[in-house]
Image 1 (cartoon, rainbow, N blue to C red):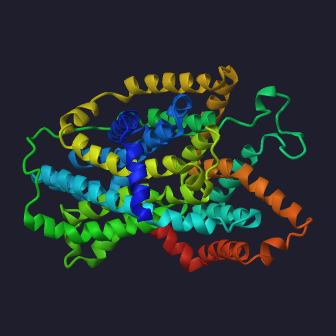
Image 2 (cartoon, rainbow, N blue to C red):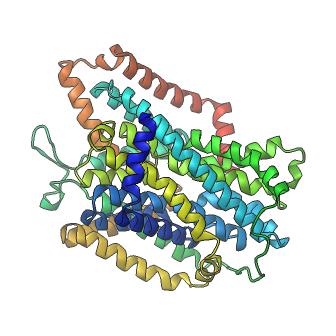
Image 3 (cartoon, one colour):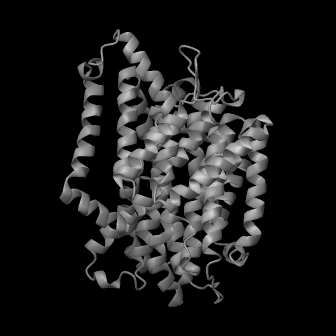
Length: 500
């Protein structure tokens, strides 16, 4: 009964006119940036963070979440029709989806992607509603040592699952931790690494950093590569509705993809990308004829599309229940909550139930909107691909500058954005993932605060982290994860899997 009462509260909040409008806006923008390569959800959410200051917390989070899972839908449309994935998680969909389109089955591929994503989104919403109260109740047993150990485990897990060099990923996290503690020490009042600039007394603006790293950095990278060759799908779409035989063929892959995405989405660094690749690999292993994959197998569309949408939604569970962002999108949403004066964690569910359950219910509403948005507007999304990137990036730059300036009406924040834009480009040139950097920056102040609290309570005894069972277990898991992935055989298989 409590479960139904919570969902009822959530839907009563989600279907208010203002929240419905911003949910639609988030889903529309998410689909748009999913279609257009070269922008992505992190940069878009970073650009829209200043806009959330004028909105209610629930409304702003509903819009930002809609952008995230909406991008998973949009990316599949161009992956199928143009063989150009708008989102990294849609790369796998392009393998078989585009081949289906070439065989005249573009409508079937698109409807399969939409139905699989909607089913996965529905299941993920139910899982979030069912699991979150249990995790939040368990999190109430956490104190400063446990929270510090949990954040260490989260950062280590993001390193283990990051692509490329482990050393580079660790370096990115350490750099993020250093940037995160710039400003005034909340305990002693001393200034740290402010370079004598009063603008840095409150720390480095996470919005300016995110816009620089994911907005300007991405623009610089794309300008080097020029416009991709884009050939729009011009044949008439037919057969949008799958037959009973098609439904039977995709039911198993959708169920497995949903399960994989739901589980992997919760992992730090997991989310939509890891889920879609894993689901595709599982279906190929289970297939009677694996050679069909890459040549238009409908299972190769159904499984990854279900997995990436489920993974996108369940990746918000650690943020909502433990206050631990599991990926860069969750880190930006955590920043939005902190800016609104809300501390992410288990207290959100008890102190602001309308916000928590309204966000959960809006995910189902948003997924329903996305089905209605994507199939009728396919022609519009494909035409957008003909816009040259050289006409798009000036508008992106203007929006970034306006958004950053509107934070504090300070030109200093624009210079911070430009500086980190150059660093973001450098990160990409050096094959360093920027996501661990932003996670370290967001978690750094919280880690420091919990570390100091733990040391004060234990009167300076560091053994407090090992004497408490939960913190000791979490730190042990973090140490084992590092040792495990450093084993030569495991590291070789990890690199091969990520390369594939």
